[in-house]
Image 1 (cartoon, helix red, strand yellow):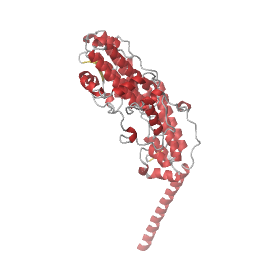
Image 2: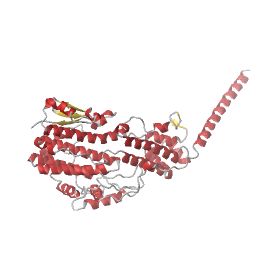
Image 3: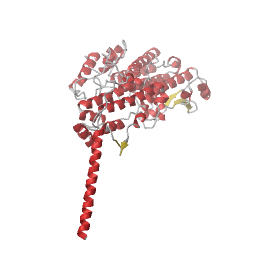
Image 4: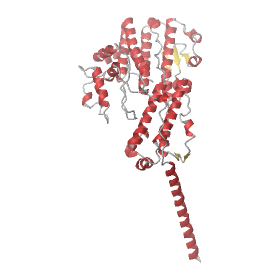
Length: 462
C-alpha cells in the first residue's frame, strides 16, 4: 500500500515537472516567435535629419589646435588632429603621446579658471597679481587668440558615422582664449585703461558668441555657455574695480541660436541611432556602447541576443528612439517651460512596450537599451537659459550702478524695469540692497550641480 502511494506521488511529481518544463518551453517558443522578425525600417524623421557634414571653418580648426607647440600653426595642427581622430580606432592623444609633446600648457586654477561654488568675481578682484602670474608665460596663446579674431565664422566639421564612440571636437581652445582675454581685461581695469579693458571683454564675448550660437553639439553649447558666463564674471569684476565705467559695460543680447536646444537634440538622437546601426553590423560592440559597458561585461541576455539574433530588433529600437527624440525636439521648440517639464520623453511610447518582471516581452534587449538611455535633457536646457538669466542680471546690476540707485530704492527700481514675470520672480536684492541675486533655472531641477547656486552681483556705488 505504501509502495503504491509512493509510486503515485512520484508519478505526480514527475508529471508536474514535465508540465512545468513544457510550460517553460511554450513560453520560450512564444518569446522566440515574438522576437524573431523585426519591423520594416523607417526613415529618420525629417526634423531630426542633420544633413551632410560640413568641411569646417578656419576658426573651428584654429580652436582645435590653439595649444599647438611653439613654431607650429594652430590651424594646421588642428586640421592634423582632426584627421588623426577620424581614424578607427582613434589614436591615443593623452599627454604622453608624441603628438602632444611640447604643446602649450592650459590655464588652470584660480583666479582665472574659476567654477562655482567659488566666488569668481571676488577671486579676480582680489587677485590681480595672480592673474598676471597665470598669463605671464602664455604670450603665444594670446597672439594666437588675437589672430583668430580676424574671422570668427564658426562652422563645425564632424566625423562620420556618428555613434556614441565618435570623437567630438575639442573646445579647449575657445575656453583658453576666453580666459586669456578675461585676464587681460581685469589687468587693464587695474591699470585704469578703459579702452583695453573693453576691447578684451569684447574679444572674449565674440568668441563665446561664436561657439554658443554656432555649435551644433551639446558639449559645444555647454562650453559656449561656460565661456559666456566666465566673461560675465570678468565684466562684473571690471565694474567692481572701475564703477564709473558701468554704463559702457552693458552686455549685448546673446547671438541667435544661443538658447536653441532643438539642434543639439537632433545631434544626440543621431548618436544613438548611429550606434543602433553599428549594433546591426557589430552587435556586441554596438550594444556595449548603448548599455554603457565593455563588451566583456555584457549580460547573458545581451550575449544571447548577439549570438542568436533574438531579443534585439534594430528597426523597432530605432523607431522608438526617433519617437523619443522627436518628442524632445518638439518640446525644445515649444520654449523653456516645455523643455523643463519633468515628464519622461518616452512616456508616449512606454504604453506600447508591455513588460513582465522589468523586461519587455518583445524586443527585450532593445527596450532595455531604451530604458537605460532615457534622455534627461532638462538640465541642459536650464543651463542654456541660465546664460541669458546671468546676462540679464548683469545688465540690471550695471544699470543700477550707472544710475546710482540708492540701495534702499533698488527693489522698487527693479519692479519698474518691465521684466517678464518669469524673470522678475527669480531676482531679488540681498545684503540690504548691496547684491543683486538671481535664482538659476537649474535650481528648479533636482541634482547637486554647482551651477544651481545663485547668481550674485555686487552693486556698490563709487
